[in-house]
Length: 171
Image 1 (cartoon, helix red, strand yellow):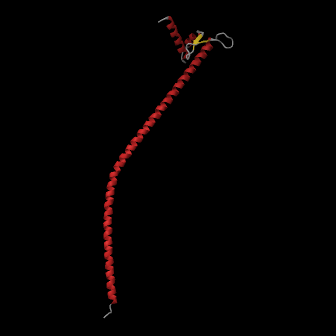
Image 2 (cartoon, rainbow, N blue to C red; image 1 turned 30 degrees about the vertical axis):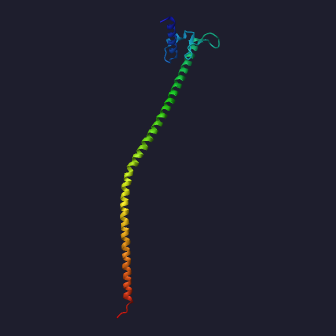
């Protein structure tokens, strides 16, 4: 490993420590000794540590704010990633629900067809029974008409006999 690679690796480790919420005070002090810091989102840009009011370097405050900014940015990035992941999962869930709905509709349709197919034989059987009963009823109605005609003839004959009996003089 070359000297430049080693120094670059140390700089990355320091950045990771400063971005972490759980680094120790001794590590924080080591980080504060470095007057120039790299930002996480732009690792090639150097940020000078200078006090805004007087121009003298205030490395503790600058490092703290840099670490705070990078922590906030890291949280924002993670939050955005989580939101994106949630939205992606919602899209997947929506596609899954649509597929489930279509599958369910197909199965319900298939079940309805099977039910309909099983009902037709019952209809056919009932239709045959009804047809037989209607045929019997028709035969019975025909017999009733015949009996009614015979009864009318008997009544007419009785009426004629009554007239003959009533119309004859008594002897």
